[in-house]
Length: 514
Image 1 (cartoon, rainbow, N blue to C red):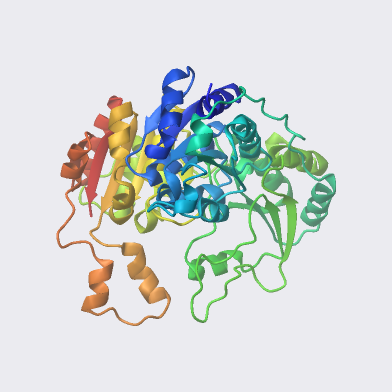
Image 2: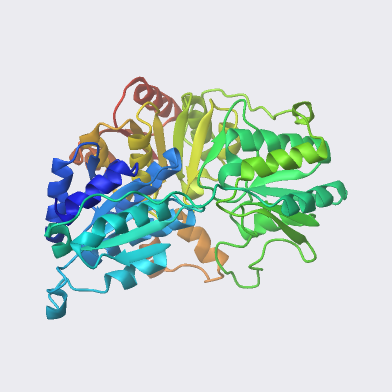
């Protein structure tokens, strides 16, 4: 076999059985190897940002890395924004990037670039295979890195001649060096803090936001009186009826500061010390109050559920201690569309065991309370802030969980970055309902313009914040990608469109005209 085939077989043997791809000339031997090897599902994306975002969504729902296939440095560069988001979400990805043949690089052909230099900022592991005999072994190391504690984006760069030259065979993935654990000393410190009686916040993300992790946090909150919250943005959160409802730290600094003002201690369970998303004149970057002590209980990659269980046991917190859940009565809204009745319509329509991918930005800031009473579901958010995240992540989540409805919520400006996701969803017959909030503007930037004290926007500034000349026709755009779409302008129309989408499998798009 050649180097490319040894790599594909190593990937399959190592449990990597999905490849999101946008290949070019240098990757043709890898494409041929995919064609000859059983056990690998190949999913084409028409833009590299779809490929990398889909791999992020796949990992979030399975905990298992997928592979990507990207074309040289420019192809990698096209995918870097969603690799940034994936890195911030601690998603494991085996990121395979083609390169010119080793003997061709020195000629400085038009596509020659520093691929390793491009890869390093968004990767936790980077290597260029030097020859065909090394490819399988390097691939096995990449898989081990992607599956590690914490998981990493592992970028393996494959020169064309290492792919087509003869190789020795497949390689075995190295065994994990250790299982995820936690620090008993850090748990003991959390016990001391929570027994101290001072206002304390238990701040969660990662594995702590699974259904079991939240149930343990509820016991701890009921026993000690501490407040439990999530980060502003989280890779995945179990939500809906029967799950412990928690709020997140608000995005706007002026809202976050009063929420955190009275805490004397914050116990971090995978979460980061709260900071503002951006710097603003005359506003603090650190959101916790002066004198508030921070205590790290678990890091990303540690076993946060086991740590929470040990914490609950040490505190004597039982299931009966969990507080009563707030309930929001869900009633299908009527009349003109507003942020409130859009939120209520979505809460009413979320089907059991759905996956909600949220890039709704300003439109969706009020979605959390009503959807907390929706049917049980998982909620995925943009961890890195690079927009164009939601439609590719929805695509990868749907590949990972074909038996679950995926609901993608996205603003019209963000959706234009990775519109091509709809084509992949149509080709693969993925069960994704994309809800585009069409307010004809980069609404979040209107707020940020004011937030940074940039003054009152004039016409030229407004021209860079609005996307209304011409207005985007989302129904036509969806049709061009092979996806059925409809526009809605009233709550009744929105309710009906959601019901129709839930009643059918396959991709649908709903344009919510605001």
